[in-house]
Amino acid sequence: MTSRVLLVEDEPDVQMIVGDLLRGHGHEVAASADGRDALRLAEEQRFDVMILDVMLPGISGFELCRLVRERGFDGGILMLTARAQVDDRVEGLSTGADDYLTKPFDSKELLARVSALLRRLGKSPLTPVLQYEFGEIAVDFAGRAVFRRGAQVNLAAKELLLLRQLIDHRGQVLSRERLLSRVWHDQPFIGARTVDVHIAWLRQKLEENPQAPRYIITVRGEGYSFQP
Image 1: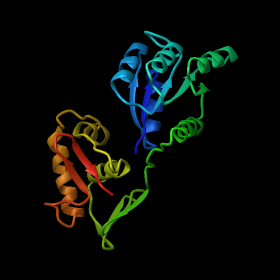
Image 2: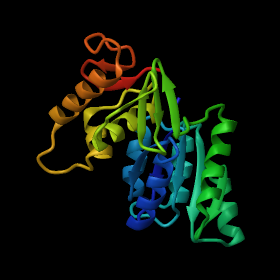
Image 3: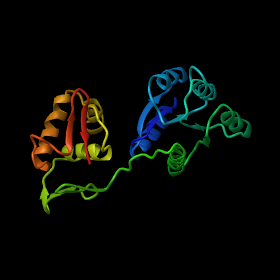
Image 4: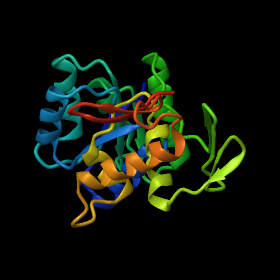
């Protein structure tokens, strides 16, 4: 099961860097730059971990932490802030945070702390893979090559990126909108039909029976899922 992380950070560069880092390591990330908006998200959606800056518009990270705990959030909370004083650490932990990391931070340490929180919760994210095999197919993402029964299959760049998204999030349902964002980066004039066409091409090249696919599955009304 992939973990869901709510990242609350009002510095755009930090939000982008941390968000991309987490997504690249198998986490699903929702981001907010405002304390009150983050509180709404936490009430409306399920998250396994929250990463909170302290100095936020709306309400502070400390207050946000206290409120979500009072309202029943039982996931992990990591405070990520430039405030390194002992009193700040104590306040963060006393409002319900599980861990406290100061800026500037090392990316490996951030990932390790998130993983530690997930282990305490009995959850762990799927790890993006460099090589993967299913059925008669062997995929080498590092070498940008796909083989079927030992013979190389010619995949276009977008097809390979799409396949990687599906495999890295195997077992999950990915919406067309999410695939458009991750593979085509929300390019103008590129719509959901593009995803459908590329899925059809992948099935033609990789599935034994493209009309009744075994691995690349359509989930009606939701999107697509790779079933290992």
